[in-house]
Image 1 (cartoon, rainbow, N blue to C red):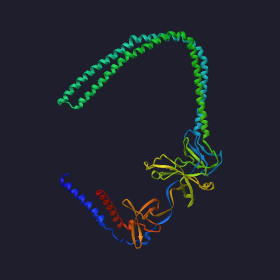
Image 2: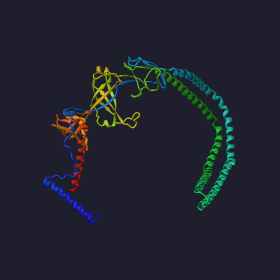
Image 3: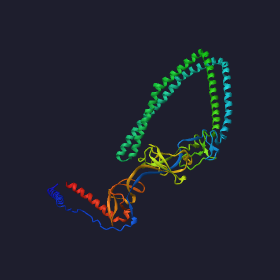
Image 4: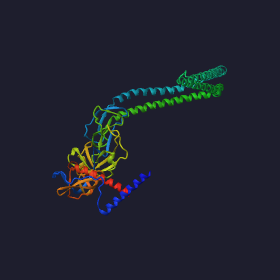
Length: 517
């Protein structure tokens, strides 16, 4: 910073400090960027005021859901094949334990049962054949010696053919392939060098040089592969094959000495075959038993007494269980709910889940019950968010369960599936000062209300607490019984603009005074 700028800064700081001292001594406020605030306002009609009152206040979280039983006896299809409903009792029918709820179409399974019955008969016949073959095998053991001699001769011929013909031929082929690969690589390198020189002289393009370079790499790889094949043949394949053929030839010579053992082994093999057929027979028999079990599962029976409610795959599903509906394995067909214990399962947005705690009180309104209200409490809060539903897949919601706290007689008058609106009491004030939400306006970073003072209206900076849909808690700034403008942004719009400038001006003055100090 040069001397002139330093002098200007010193004079500016001195003048600012002098203004502060003069203001403190004389009590005269020097206006800095002030704005005029009008003293008169449009006349606010009496209907435009609301009275600040004191009373209880609740912070409610409202969400709709469906009534459901806390203890449902779910009847599922235990038929392992997809089928259809032939008949089902009407929804709402009272059934006793052991009554038939639904009949599923088992015609395909019965047909399969009949077809598999033939396979079971065949498996039985194969088992009989295996047992007879075991007896016949003893008669075949006499032919084993002739077969062993023939096998020995063939093994010797195979060993001789490999040593004198197959191995030399394979070796010659690989050596020739290696020589050709070396020659191809040499030519490819020379061509690459030639093309590289032509590129430098400008007669060939770099693309051609790159092509020749890649060709050299391919030839190099081909040479490596040829060399590897030759090495594998010499070091491993030849030794392994020769060892194996030699061992086979020796083994064939000793085979004649093991005729008796071979005969016993043959008998053992037939015994194993018998056991294998027995296992195969058991597989077919078990499958028949499984089909028979599934046929029985096509008759769905009530496991307890109660009222039948058709099941839905999802709460948002519009498809209904009915005669002719397709049913898959383990799909719920109906439920028999416990009407004495009801609950409402809600999906709450992630912004509201922080307000919910276990055992919070709730007020439940069932649409079918009119204006009747029921008390309840939060019994479960999911810690894992649910995936959003169409079309808001990115929305995150949490499952919250609210139990209905009502006498069993009252609960029985309601039915699962009814639509219910739940108001969860997230917070409560037994006695607090409150005003209409419409009477509070935010000006800058402050909340302001306009209060009647005789024939005038004055603004008042206030501090807020909890709020509901219509009321807001006043922590400070207003007293019980005062009248506040109901819609200040309409009737006091000019004053709000002036206050915004005034608050902004006050922030600027505080900032400059802090800089002077």
